[in-house]
Image 1 (cartoon, rainbow, N blue to C red):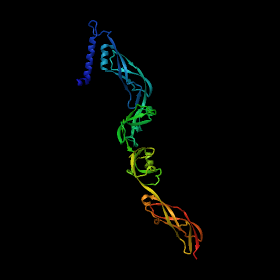
Image 2 (image 1 turned 45 degrees about the vertical axis):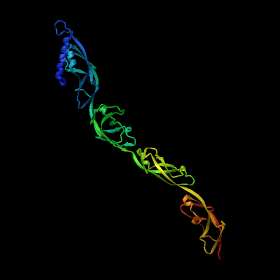
Image 3 (image 1 turned 135 degrees about the vertical axis):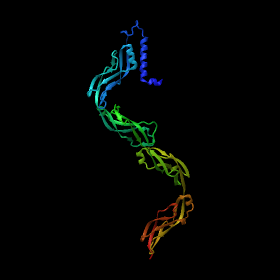
Image 4 (image 1 turned 180 degrees about the horizontal axis):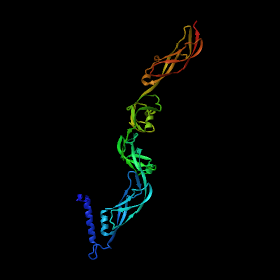
Length: 405
C-alpha cells in the first residue's frame, strides 16, 4: 500500500475518483449533468510560489514563499484542482532589471473554467546583482565552559576562509563570520568538532547568504593551568624563654598550584606559617598551605610540620681568672679593677651543654698589645665552648702599665 501511495499516477487517479464521487453526491435537477448554477469556491492555503529569474547572476528578495489562492468555478474542476494541485503559482522575472519593482503573481496550468484570486496578488521585489566574496572565519567558544584551572588557547579553524554568496548590499553588511562551537558540560581536554558558519551584521543579525563550505573543523586547544612550587616555612612570633627552635620539617616539600597564567607566572612559592610563640616541646602540627591572590587551588591543602625544640638553661660560672696578653717584656701591668683578677660569666644554651661547663672551659683575657705606660681601660675578651652563649659581668678592666726597668 505504501508503494502505491508513493506513485504519483495512483494519487491522481484516486483524486479523480474522489472528485466524481463528490459530484455524484450533490443533488441534481432532472437528468442534466452540467448545470450552470453548480458552482463552488475553495481556498487553498500556503501554495508554493515559483520564481523564474537568472539565478546565476541575480538575487531576488521580497517574494513570499507561499500564497493563499481562492478558486471559483464548476464544482468538479474546483475539487480536482484542490485535490491534485497540479498548477503553479509563479513570478516571472526573467527580463527584470536590477532594482526595486512591483510584480504580479500569476497562475499557470489551471483550467480556464476556473477563476482565481491570489492573496497577495502582487508584491514589491528587489532584484540585485549576486556576488561572491571570501571571508576569514573566526572561531568562537563560550569561555565559561572551560573547567576551572584550565585555559583555552588560540582556536584553529580548517579551512579558515569561506566563500559567501548573496546580494551585493547584504555582502557589504557582513561584519562577522563565526564558527561557533557549542558543547555541553565543562571542557578540560583539547576538542575538535565540526561547527556551522554564522554570518552576521554589525548588530549581530543573521544574514541571508549562501556559505561554501557551510561548516568548518574547529580545534580548541585546552591546557591545565598548573605549576609545582616549593612550600616555604615562615616563623611567626618569638619562642618562649628558654626554648630554641632547632628545626621545622614538612612532610611535603612542594605543592601544585592552579590559577590564571599571570598569577602562575608571578608565584614562585607557597607557604605555611608556624607560630613558634606557642611551642615549648617537640610537636607535629597540621597547617594550611597559604596561597597568594589569583591562585584558585593548591594541592596539598594542608601539610604536617614536625617541630624540634631545644630547651635553654642559664647559669653563672664564677671566678674565671683574668689573664694578660700582648704585654712586652719591658713592661709590667697591674690589674686595678676587678681587684680579684677574676670575672663571672652568665652562660646560657641547651640544657645538656650548660649543665657541664666549668670555669676552666673558658679563657678570659685582656690584650695589651701596643699600649704604653699609664692607666688604661681595656676590653675583656672571652673564649669558650661553641655550643653555649655567655656574657661577662664586667666589660672592661682598669690596668696600669709601668716600665719594668
